[in-house]
Length: 108
Length: 115
Image (cartoon, rainbow over all chains, first blue to last red):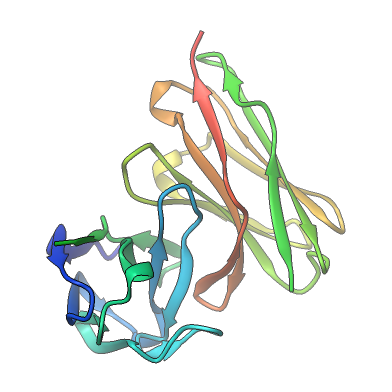
């Protein structure tokens, strides 16, 4: 199974700044099987990006995903107050889903 | 759109069996895989297993043979986790599988393992 390592653990930024979150896999992951989720306190995760770069329904354009193989990135172009949350990457392979440990985006 | 709601006891004794039900509204379970994911407090997400309307299942090998899932009705499916310990204390989510992703989630239910 692919182990996903996210970095940094915490990202301290101000509203309006650009956020770049990394997800590195221990082995190659099909881009089709890579997703990103946002989770706010007390809430369930919400699907943001699937297929490494496709936005889910209703997700603003400021969220974008990229990458292939073992290195994937989630970018938030200009942080809005509601974007401060924890973000998880997730992969599917060999009938098994795994998640990264998460990156917290906090207000600086 | 489909909505999911988890239900079940919030407290389970050690060595007992955790039992949860997920109720689907705004649609049925037909045509999709459904899954269970859990999250210990302050920690990350762990995929537990998935089930199809036919009753086909597979599960995370890390949980060994403790996990059982079943389809109860056209609108409900269930999770059973046996031989629980404090390490199984978590928020448990049910979700819909969409391809390789989870596109609809329940709000989650906290289950505490304690005597």
